[in-house]
Amino acid sequence: MGKYFGTDGFRGEANKDLTFDHAIKIGRYLGWYYGARLDKKAKVVIGKDTRRSSYMFEYALCAGLVASGADAYIMHVTTTPSVSYIARVDDFDCGIMISASHNPYYDNGIKIVNNNGEKMDEETLLLIEDYIDGKIEIPVATREKIGRTVDYVAGRNRYIGYLISLSKYSFKDVKVGLDVANGAAWSIAKAVFDALGAKTYVMNAEPDGFNINTDCGSTHIEHLQKFVVENRLDIGFAYDGDADRCLCVDEKGNIVTGDHTLYIYGLYMKERGKLLNNKVVTTVMSNFGLYKALDKVGIEYEKTKVGDKYVYENMVQNGHRLGGEQSGHTIFTKYATTGDGILTSLKLMEVMLAKEKPMSVLAAPVVFYPQVLKNVRVTSKPAAQNDPDVQAAVKKVADALGDTGRILVRESGTEPVIRVMVEAETNELCEKYVDSVIDVIRAKGHIA
Image (cartoon, rainbow, N blue to C red; front, top):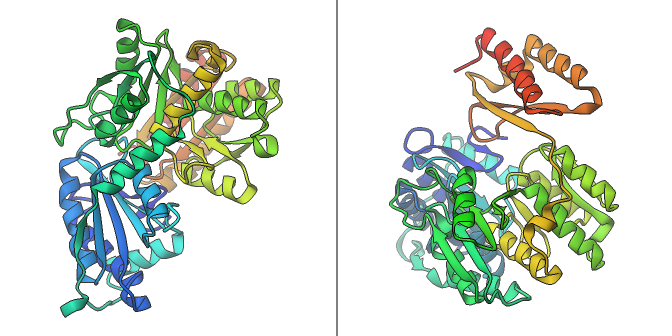
């Protein structure tokens, strides 16, 4: 990771960690890098979520882009995967999404994808960082070479049409609940499900600039659980702020995680001879229960670092077709180059309708080990992670668990946070072991 860009873009509190000046410079560099540097006019597509600050960053990026001679195509409020899709199919040089995903409204982020809709390579991001820090100078465009902005809501509509085209079944008479998190999916998800014939029940679809992810969406799925049960729905889906992840709720109100999705769709692919290499790609955060379930049906798996970026890299390098994270980022490389929450929900609907079984039955073979994950805000992630006493505490827990569980301590890629996770035979053991490590982090003075 660089100075500004982490595993999922440049993210931080708006106008504190990530400022409008940063956005202008990012636009300036991208406009020059893909345009004037190559003696051509660059085309860049931009989307944003519903945060109030997203409008500020959108205009700042546009100003930087056109000042460098690029044309900026504005998709307005839309999802991260839609920007990825449009960058790929509509011949853009790159795409920019303004979003801090599942973070609160006062945070924001700038995610950049290449012309194939993939997360931007590290080399280019480091060049952008050098420009931000004044290490590189680039010229401005003048006269007829100044760029323009183009309203491109048509791109969002094209993406909606693409999603609709992927469904193999009508959703007629299926009662579906959608929690769109007052975020980017609010104007897209219902349109897709309605077009496919579902009886769609939507919650948290009144964004006001400040309520994105607030007590709603995939990070607060308990509300969708209650909603599904009270309305006697067949299934429910919850997205995060930019809709690149999806969690599901079955007809009984049980949570169906990203790990369940990998099992359900992986088995579906295997049964149809579509699971290339007979493997799914997971991260180190996937639950033991997933691996036990995959073992039983003869599906192999890879494990990567946390981050859908690393999942996708593994999939491309090895030719795998399905991968994702427990948090709900699921990647179907036949259809997308990034996690796509709405696409994931369509694929789960496909399995449910093809097998004519409720989601509770499809998910039942994945029996989770109890897991406790706690986030600790620290003054320095490397200092906390590499402290010998902290490492000794982690080893002590690992030795105590043996083959009955595991401990994972890792740095967040987007926040000043250390994540401590334990899986064990009971919740009590998980809590005990997690707290024992956090106590050492606190005692050594690393807590912010």
